[in-house]
Length: 76
Image (tube, rainbow, N blue to C red; front, side, top):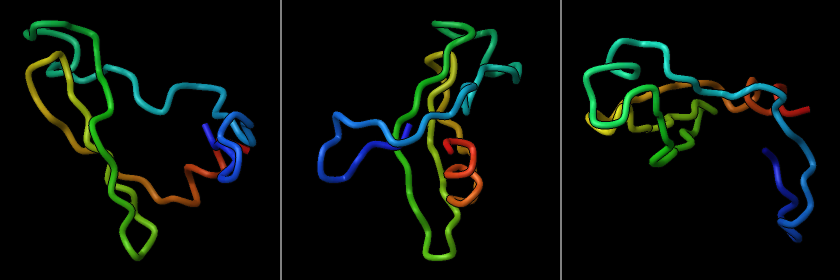
C-alpha cells in the first residue's frame, strides 16, 4: 500500500495480491503459529534494493529482498 506523504489517510496505490505468503516449510509448519508470516522491519539500500525482515511461524526471522521500483509497479 502506498499512502500520501502529507495525508496518510489517502491511499495512492495498492497491490492487488499479498507481497508475502507462507509457502516454505519453515513458514508453514513446525512452529508455534503455522502458516503465519508478519513483517518486522525494512531497509532501503542506496541502490534501490529493499530488505524486508519478517517472522515465520513465530519461530524464525527471515529476509526477503526486492527492488523498490518493482514494488512500486505492483502498487500502481
